[in-house]
Image 1 (spheres, rainbow, N blue to C red):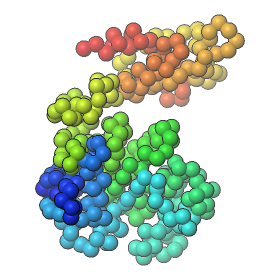
Image 2 (image 1 turned 90 degrees about the vertical axis):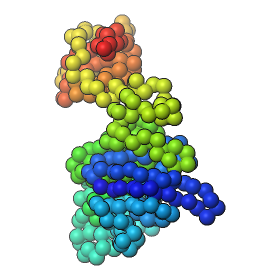
Image 3 (image 1 turned 30 degrees about the horizontal axis):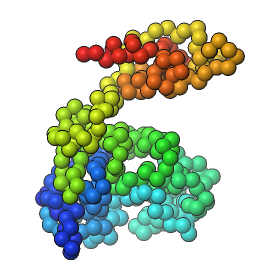
Image 4 (image 1 turned 120 degrees about the horizontal axis):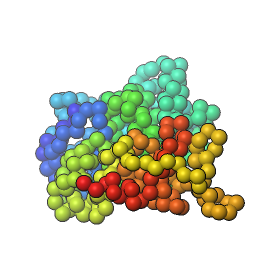
Length: 333
């Protein structure tokens, strides 16, 4: 557990970036710091590994004050991922990932084999291992950055807006990859973002910060959406918080209609498109599965050219459809 007790960061010119911050970050979960520009998100994150030193208060990890050990030693035991990956341009991909293990005294062969395993774990093609960062896409660089942060098997990972510089499609892929990795490895992750949707998707807990570095609310995303503590939190979440809350309700009980004749399916049963009376098919749009959220089901309905969301099973086979009317009726209390 990481604990902040009355932590303040004040700069020499009098600017207060973080003001009397107290919170407990649970182990083996993802905690997201979110808030507007100037709220102290990154400063709070960087005080954990002492790349920024606190002015007053205490930060402890599992009950031990982080100032009780050498700052460099502390940092080597904490993974750190930043925007644009921050890779060494003169080192190959595999050399970047092996950097910290080598600093910790691992032999070259062990460091290399561990780096290769981690590249595979974060979903990067091993053919890219000998390339340099400039030869990779932004999404690929971020995967390398995550692999490098995991290289010494740290208990804690700090992630400072790591996905904000990539396009929305790649960003979604990286978010899903992070959630998959977390299910496998169960690290204590502190994640900074300005995007409330990203915070809700990734966070087990969310800390909403006000401008000036004051904590407004700390809660699981479902509680944050259901019970914002004040007008500031409610405004930051946005007026569509009811739509976002659908993320936490599954589509298991939705009343599906049979697959209609106008939905063309492939030989394996996967949906191909909607027949519109002409030779050309209209694309299906998004699909959803029973275990997905109601938000995913609503997205499938809204992206469908005929207003019907297609439900598929784990193999991708279409098993039913639902239209907007049936979906909204199912949402009634």
